[in-house]
Image (cartoon, rainbow, N blue to C red):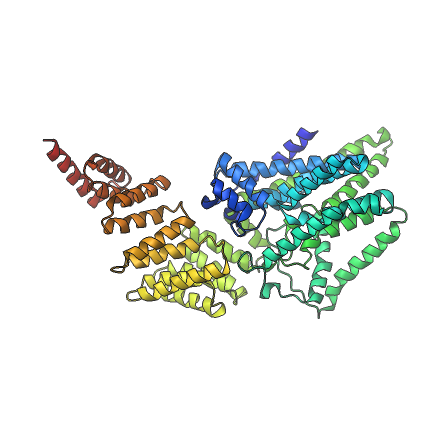
Length: 636
């Protein structure tokens, strides 16, 4: 049966297995500067080295990159395997609790389409990995509760800590275990049930508060400012609405989206109070029902309690775009799935058609029909994650009012050379959210690539800086624009310097900081007597991004210009090791080698490589002719 769970999960997620890197996957798949043993050390001990401080998660990504590099299939298979493993652990937990429908609950969890975002999106390995440790900790704790063996206690606590180091929403586990014990026993005993979990609450609360601090710190994630400025009444309204939304998606998983519409939470609108009032009424009704059956209230408490970190009381970065996301309820849905699976199993067993004894037909056909429907929906949903453009176009069709989606679709269109289409998407984002400076920067980037639109691009960068004078990307791109204008090189240098200062102040781990140093180096290289400054900036850029072939190439050019030919050769060779198919680098390397005694044969070899890549290059042909003539002259 375990193998069947894995096979069913794999079949359901086949369309996503070769899906490309999406939104912030490049921030999770280990960057070049973190791929060494020192990089692994930084993952654990350098706060800000990774997007979020989840050291076990990023250690897993570090190890995975060692195994299969940038091949996306490996990451997707890992996510699917982790999700299937969680489904198997769920089966074991439900059986340990002596509830009917254990296998049905496991298969529903494995195949439910609301889990697609957590499984098909590489970045959300944080959900699938933490889910395995969360459920393993819960299962081990149930064994401890039965045997009271100290070794099991510490194993369970260790698994809980591993879950927290993968994703801190798992901090709700000790509260969930108390709910389970209350459901089983009808009451909680301090010494038996509560006291052993006190260290868990302390560890979980500490991890949660630390993550909340990281989320709100500008130098790290920066979930603060206008998008997060909710009053207490607004947060209470949000907390009352979110569980209804998620519960409906579990029970009727239609129209699922990567990004849902950003609700307007208005404490002056009376009908919005229906959500929290409905939650209160439901809690009272389930409390009354608990006198006869504690199960529904236990499921409700588990569901709502597991959602607590994302109900709106704490700021998390995605609230900038939407207050809800499917992956937020990855574990919370167990509070609905397990009671529903148990209830359906009991119900199916009671159905007994006259021509089929003991209801065996219903007990087989109804679950099979349910799982087939869920699996088909998951397969269809996972196909959205095959590439960035498909995901955002599909989501935009369902959520056309999202400026975030328009902007990100524009980024993809720009990366494939479709600047006019990208500009249209960025303009839509600006119309929807005119006070977001990032959207003005993106529009400026698209306009700068279009003939005759440089002045419009500069206007967009300047608009962004009026909204946020400390936005480093706006300074960086304004510097690039000035670089291409006659007589504006000093202005460009000033913008690059300001960009570097803002990056260092605002976002320590910003991956594009190297670009500011690189472009400042390019500007210095164009000024007489500033070659040493250019070299310093290139080297700084390469410390941040050692796999930049372009930075190695331009550093080589400046060294060559200064007569430091052997050093230039080393930089050209480093550039070609990263990207061997750039003819200009082969040409410059050949030219530099020709100036070193005894290295003309190597220069000829490089020139041949250049001509293979660019056969009609006239300077390359002339250099080859000169090298051959020199070689033949030396040979006579």
